[in-house]
Every structure is written in structure tokens, then in C-alpha cells.
Image (cartoon, rainbow, N blue to C red; front, side, top):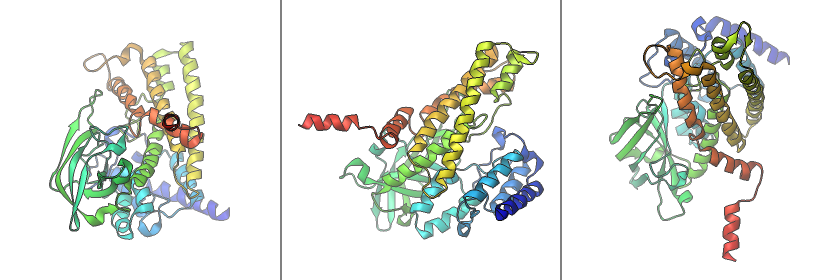
Length: 414
């Protein structure tokens, strides 16, 4: 206990001395730090905060110190998170490399791959994107057809991906490709990494109904990738893909914990992201919310949010005991996304007619942003695997219910 108390004291002192004051305020959308080769910092303190946290490995506090991580144990990591929350510190780095690729690379990557990529992820030097979904392979991801053919020691990749978050801004991509068309679909998939600056790669942003364009169509035309960039064994990428999806779903579930979200960044983008504050501002009467129905819905939302936060924290602590995310990530993803959607429904109810604006006079910037985020929240139940897929995973992997489709096929064969 004395060692942990000393760690907490030292951590508190270090954060007090090194976390800039502007990094102790609510995050705003255009100051989220994604890192990468072309990183731009609107707030100079953001760059300073990233550099200081990365130097200690605290952007990835539990990753091994020999790869640039913080090397903290479970108890130390909990203390660090508590101290960061105590001063309302912003995340120093938001990264798909941290939330998705890094954990599976540490599990399945070669020593050379780990040494090449993990330190850069920790430092925020490379921005990653994910090449999974295709125009004809969304929920049935294993039916993907992007092809990788080996010629000597180089793969030639042809095909396309869709809904590739920030592909137009990413430096590298972790990508699922088909390397064998003669075997069952799950058995012929491989997991590979390559530079988005490689010749033959083009991206096209997709504009959403919310007005944003965080997703892209991504096209590969005879893209050359070194064989050494293949992660794990040839044709066994599906197991890595599933593992990564568990990490992704855990990340997406955090939308249910935040007071707001930016496209897959999980950060506040509006000053009206607090449901209670917005309701009091638009529906308040003195010190009391006058709408009894809305008051009841907000109270239930706060109770559910607190329960979800405790459940998520327990899951995180259990995962740090050695196994990482598992099928329960589908439970967290499903509930967290539904909770986030409820948040924006309540915000819209609180705003009333002020939540109907899109542009022009009569609406301030916060009101217009809430309307857009309400629309954006609808995608929560699609990205990272639809809610229907999550419920299937929960039924089979968590509850142990029988597979009805398999039973029907067995009965039909009799």
C-alpha cells in the first residue's frame, strides 16, 4: 500500500506541474489531438501535453516500457486515471493505434513489427485508419473481396474499402485482405499493414447527413506492400480481426460515458452536452425543471449512466488482469451506444424548437451542433458491428444460447 500511496503522490505532483491549464478544460472538437505525420495543433498546449505524456509512456500507460509504454500495473493505471479525472485533464492523444491496432499488434505482431510501430503509436507520430468494411461486405465482413497476391516478397493489393474513418488524413492503415479464394471465406483472410502514401491509394470523403465527412471510400490499385507487413500467419487474419473488433467495440462503448462525442473520438463538441444543464437552461423555472416528464427521464438517464460507468470500469479492471476485452465488449458497445443515443434524444427534447435549426439566424452554434450530433449518434448502432450483430454475440458467447440457424440446418439434414 505504501508503494501505491507514493505513486499516487508522485503522479499528482507531476500532473500538477506538467498539465497545462488549458488542458484541464472540456475538450472541443477542433482541439482533439490525433497525432500523425501531418499533425496540426490549434492550441500549442495540446502539443506540449502530448509530448510530456508520451515521454512518460502515459498515452499508453499499461503497455510495456521497453516499447515506449508506461509499464504501469493495474493498480497504478487506475490511480493515474483517477488523478487525470481529478484535474479534468484532456486526453493527450486520441488514436485508433491505441484503441484498436496496438493491443492486437502486441499480441500477434512480430518483434520487428512491434518495435517499428508501437513506439510511434505511443508518441502519436503515426495516425492509423482501419480497412475492414467494403461496399458488399458490411455486417458480413468475412465476405470481403479486396485481394492481396504475393509476387516474390511483395503483395499486390487491389480492391476497395468503405466507411474508412479519416482515411484521407491517416498515415498508415491496418487492413483485411483476401489471400485465398479457394477456402471457406473465414479461412482465406489475412491482416496486413501499409503506408497510405503508397502509390495506387486514393480516398474520397463521404458527406454524412450531419454535414460532417469523417468517413471515406478508399481504393487500392496495384498497391505494393512488403511481405514483412503481414501480421500473424497467412490466411489466419480473421482471428486477429475479431480480437481487434473487441477492442474497437470497447472504445465505441465509451460514447455512453462521455458528455458528448466527436466522430469516433468520444469527446465533447458542444457546450450543451450536459443534458441536465441544457434542460435547466431551456425548461428551467427558478431552481427547478418545470417539465415533470422530462425531469423523470433525465433522472432515469443519470441512474443508468452511473450504472454503466461502474460496469465499464469493472470490465476495464478485469481486462487488465491479463485477458483483455472479450465477448462482454459487445454488451458494453450495445448499451453504451443506446445510452449515447438517449442522451441526444433528451437534449433535443430539452431544446424544444431550438433543436430544429440547421443554419441561419435564430439559433446559436451550440444548438446547431447538438442537432448535428443527434443525427450523428444514430450511426452508433451501426459502426463497429450493428446492434443486431452485438445481440447475436451476446446470445452465443455470453449467455450460451443455442445457435438457431445451426440447429435448423442440422434438423433439415436429417
